[in-house]
Length: 123
Image (cartoon, rainbow, N blue to C red; front, side, top):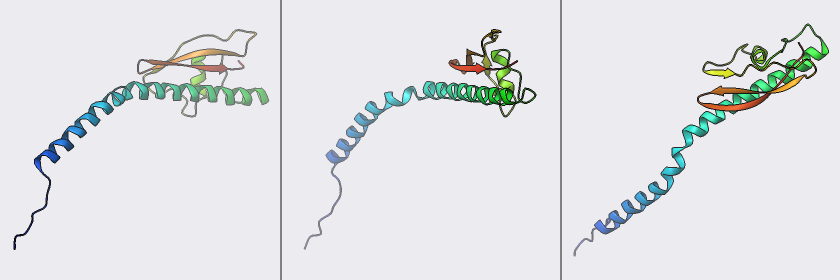
């Protein structure tokens, strides 16, 4: 009596390799721009933090003018962050708040990407 051997044929193995090659060729372009998306998301996160810190600081100063940080321009908002400063490699445009306006739109830049945030302040 002869024992039958089991296993994959060469054609089956080649077909699996071809299918994996096609799948990787289709999926690869989706992962190429992940780096740019991550950099933009990081700048958007910093902008959200600045906007939030500015709003909380504004509420604190509105209730008691001795608390919080005096916000007179976009760059002074970074002092309202919990860490007290921006992370390295990030910059804020220096636009002053007008005397009759309590908020303005500012731009934060980092990693070659930009995002807008709102600076609200009471000097």
